[in-house]
Length: 408
Image 1: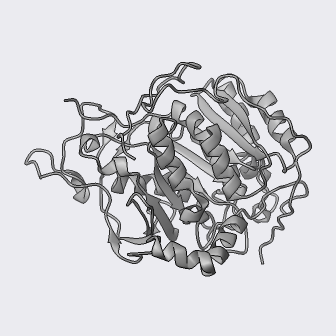
Image 2: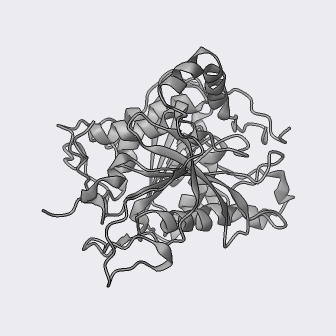
């Protein structure tokens, strides 16, 4: 049993909140890039999609895996047979590779077994550095894309854990073969171990991105979905707590290095974002504020704002170094770089005031903070994905750098 209890929390009011710039802009067609409502954040680029189809008292780190667990129950009943017929699980366990390797070029071999094509003229593009991971399929989407898993031992943290990945169909489109893609690291709530519930297609995160690409409201993010904690007993605040597995280094260093080894990525932070729910939202928020040179934006759903793992054992100094409030003030005092924070909260949840307070205190200077209400939303993954479809994916896509097709 976890040291945390996850009480259902209720939100005190029902009033929607939308940032005037990023609330719900309208796009005149399927091409992402036209920005008739509001300026695009600095550094963002356009993408033309393929025209195809308890914690401490007061904390709300509720186990969002409840949504995924319910999905599993449904699949185990009559829904499971229908899903099997639809091919959800067909091929599970089979090897999976991402990215079609172009014919080798004598002067462009990538080190470590990466792809051999020359990158585009954008110096920010980095081809896979290798070595390639051994991926096995854990699920598939109706568009043919695959969700896959591998076992990773972090070179810097020393921690060994499972990582799930998914790439949108645009990643294999020949016209983007020399382009990088933005990466979104998706973090689960609850114990975040031994699985990451965002890898379950029933929650709809992958489809939300694919649908958003077709609608022109989302970039085609590559999803990296690691375990959040090393066990089911404790919560580690996504930090390097003395004497414990280095889960901060796992998220901040090993996971991005893993993505670079296996996918075409951007060298700059413009291609790196996080999203998370509940306890994963805390870690995503903390990572963006702690490493603004590496990550540019975060969608934090039903999230928390201060560390509270009992494993700190009163080490106030180190806790402060992992406290988003302290990190935010440090970033403001240092005048940047700019980061983008989007809080999501269901209207049936509580403690919106905490997010409003953070926005009022730290949503200035280099820290851009928005709050998105999910009408009739509760503390679960399905509703947070709905919030992403209703506007948060569009919001974060404006802040990030998307792939560019080859000219001609």
